[in-house]
Amino acid sequence: MYAGICRILLRPLRRLGYPLDADNYYPGHGHATLWQPEEVMPDFSWDVVAQYEWPKVLHEKFPVYLSDRKKAAGKRECRRMSLPDDAWFVCLHVREGGWHKDLMDERNASIGNYLEAIREVTSRGGWVVRMGDASMTRLPPMERVIDYPFTPSKSYAMDLYLIAECRAYIGMQSGFIRSLSCSSGPWS
Image (cartoon, rainbow, N blue to C red; front, side, top):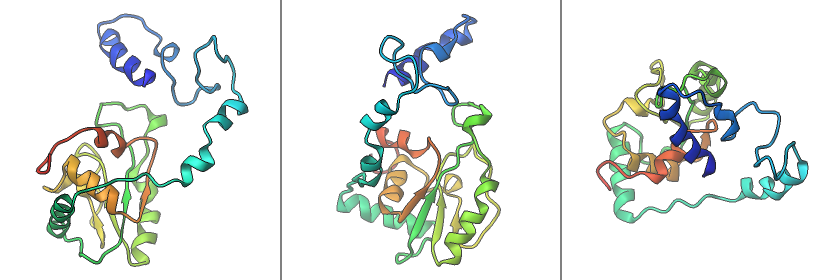
């Protein structure tokens, strides 16, 4: 939370020309230390990592609950996108940086690097629903692949439905998680 507040507050100040070193205010990718306020811990510590209990956290399911009405609306939108009722699917998100005009290469990736994963899912009979926003690079036409950001079905509510119903999620350190705190679209 601290990091998010700092990023929000510092962005306009940097745009106004104030010489701020944002890395001193919030954690960032590629830093040599696990972020903690300086007075607490100046260097990386496996003890701090252990406190987060990642193996336990990563094996717990994140519950996403939808009412029957919202599930029915989601199913209708899936049909509209040509996703069969009985299909299993994987959600895929590959961050490109266009959403916030954040083009820091170390945080972004190319959708082309995920084409083999897409082919693997579809070769096993599944579908791939590519998540994201319309600033992303379009996928080439592929069988059993829905480039969801470019469909009329795109909404925060549908994001939530797809996440709740997918068999697996393939993605990066960002993506739909921000959508969970927003409300938009036909169901809000």
